[in-house]
Image (cartoon, rainbow, N blue to C red):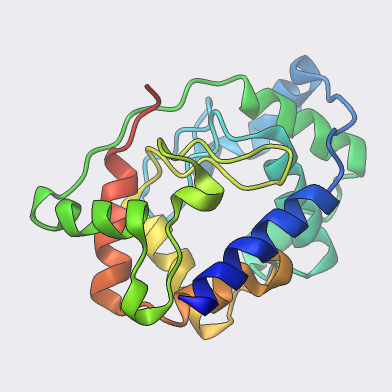
Length: 205
């Protein structure tokens, strides 16, 4: 329980320290730039391949941060590194603004594991020191744009599972304050699959 309290304190501290706003992007220009993204993410940001994320409806602040992290190498992915190589910061803001305005397509959850996933999402795993996902992502998985915590509702379960495993192995390390790495390190494969499936079926109320 002490670990969970300290994790929540760290979440709040980082959220308060982060900038509250992002210079507005131009969604019309972002749509023009998005043509190169459509092959993987779809014309409206709703990817068909579950290995690639849906970015429709994602907070502009979060999308912009991820693009910047790919550009700097803080988040490693050979395909994305090539895609962002010729983008400047305004391009990234414009793309983020375009995708933020798109409608996220709903997802579905595997009911065989969703009940377990809901318990983890809403209550964490106290015995392992895993805090509830709602602390950062909210009760309906809509995230927190000011703190750059992403929308996770409706996201492909496979993509979310992959990212949690990458955080656990530290293959992905662009989380502020190691929050996701510290939590994922305490989750089993079954925990990860269950919560990823539950998040896939979440929708805004």
